[in-house]
Length: 535
Image (cartoon, rainbow, N blue to C red; front, side, top):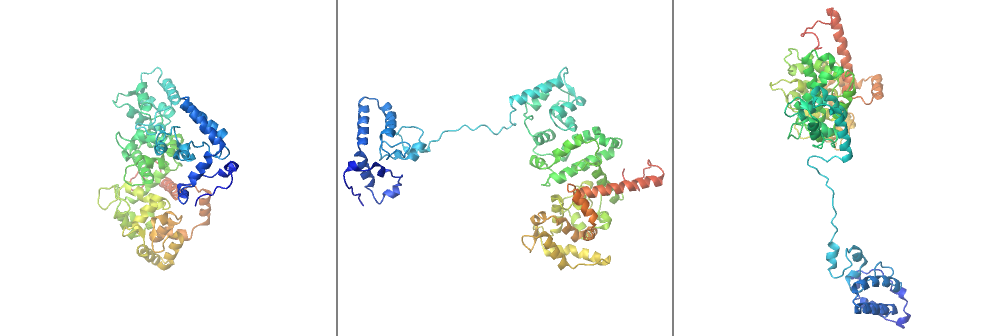
């Protein structure tokens, strides 16, 4: 449809020409609309003056300057028809007249292709964010560190190993029992001293200064060209801890118990932190755990008796004494019959068989059919605290007979049958499996009632009680008849775990038994391996 021009063109109101930007699709039904608008635009007096000015500029051979001036004069001389656009087009037929393209252009030149101008982007300089050997320290931090280093090394050709502890703690901000490990890391030639230049090259030149504390610990402990920590990597710091910590001074006369203490600490670290179970502790696992804060805490703590977590002497004492009680022949191995006696025969034969089939964890013991001390540490930590992930995963694998990752009613019934038989033998009130299954489903609230997944167990706070129902009769009965006073104590100390409470109770009991035995023998110095506890 053609536009009908009515009346004199000079009487046309320019405001009527203020049209919004049109899409090419909108012009398809009216192919001559743009030409008619262009004709109207040319007929305006302001347009005529503009064209004459441009022609005069061309004649004076000042095209480059006239282009800029015309843009300014256009903005002031054109009617309100084109004031809505930020830069009015020099030619309405040119695609460069689109406001969107004008904004994206990096050059006012119209000689190139507009598509090419749109696609061109300014190249931004991205600062380096990955450094193979670590981020370089800022100059200010580097200068402060060098000043502190000069103070400690001033007047010395080098520091010996017994003088290096202050450098480890004050400059490196590492626990003091890292001193020996750090010293030997720098003194690669075993010269017995570390010079200022050697320390600067390692700590600052190696960019260890800018690492976070967990990465510093990881770098100091791990072997060269190794991407994980092994149990042996912790030996240097534990030996120094035993030799220097005042809370472990009483163990210095018994090297055997020092060795057992160090082993127990390492086993507990890998039990809680090495969630992959490979025996290779990665940097990611180290950062996710609470080992670094525990190391800092133990370095400031004077007594490790009541201290919790990995370095607690109280926890070590309970674990080792429990193992000693079960290992009747003291060959440092435990068989099925020994483990059945654990917890006053609380466990069923079926669950013990699953443990010795090494389903939840492969034994480190090389003796067939026997469990070593490391295996027992994993067992007792899982047994006495089934609410944490390591314990949940340990027992879930035991109950999962077919290893398909879910627990079915048939698998639950298989383990509960022996519990039911034991309740009948002890004249306890029995509960049918159908009722127990309903109770378990109500506690866990699984996503699907046909089976229970590990994810369902981890999302429930009562998951540990489910395992007690299936294979630990003593804890099952204790939960059903639990003392309100103990419940109130648990609520008063919510930070303590089930393992913490168990270890504290057993430590008091074992200490009292030892005192009674010492009193009955008439002397606290009498030692009899066959009857007394190992301490």
